[in-house]
Length: 261
Image 1: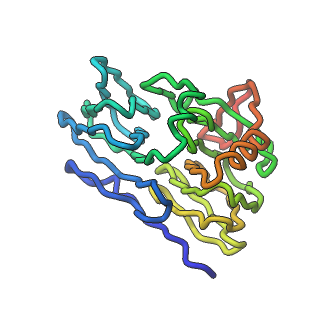
Image 2: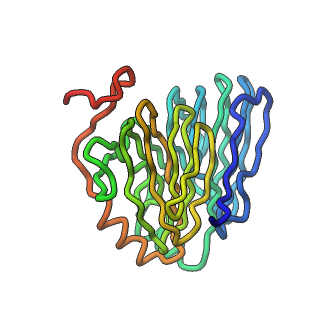
Image 3: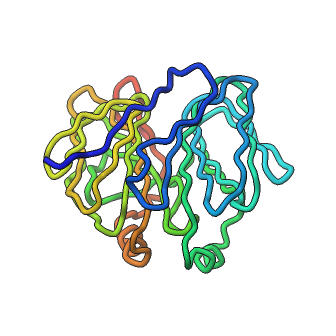
C-alpha cells in the first residue's frame, strides 16, 4: 500500500496561531489552519497568490477594501489578491486557508472569468450537483466553481451510511480531502481503506483510484479541494461530471434521511 499523507487538525486549541498543513504535497498550494480567539484580529497581506478562506467554526468579521462582512456560519471568503484582509474573531474562530500561488497564464484566465472580489459563498447555499460516482441520496455541493479562481475549485460531499462513493481516478486533478468535525468514513486509496474522522486533512495521491465507504450510523461530510495540473483537461472533467441539480436539499440530522422538499 502506498503512503498517504494525513494529519489531524487541532480545533481544540485555545490560542491564536497559524499552522501549515501537509506542506509540499501539491506544488504551489499551501493549506493553513488559523485559530483566532475572540477579540483578536489576524491580518493577511497580499502576495502572488490567492487567500482562499474557509470559516469552519465561530463568528467572524472579514475586512478588506474598506468594507466589512460579518458571518455566523460556514462560509468561503476570497479577497482581491491585490489587497490585504483582516480577520476579526467575534467568538473563537477556526479557519482553513488555501494559499494558491499564481502561475504563468493565470492573468489571462482571471480576465476571462471576470470574478468580482471579494468572492463570498455561504456554505449552506452552495450550488448542488449530481455526480455519476455518487448515490442519489448523496448531497454534493460546489462552493467555488471551476471558473472562479484559476486552476482551482472546491466543494463538498455529504451523506449518511450505508452509502458509498465509487472508486475513480482523475490524473488531471490534484486533491485534498478535509473532514468536517462530524465526519466519519473510510477513504479507499487504491481499494485500501483509510479511516477518516473529523478535523482531518488527507492528500489523495495524484492518479490514484479513490472512493469512500460510509457504514451504518456514520455521517460522511468532507470538503474536496482541487488543483489543476492540466487546466484544460480538468475543466472538461468537472464540466462533464458536475451536473447542477437546480434544487436545494438537506439532511435531517436526527434521522440521517433527506428532508422532504
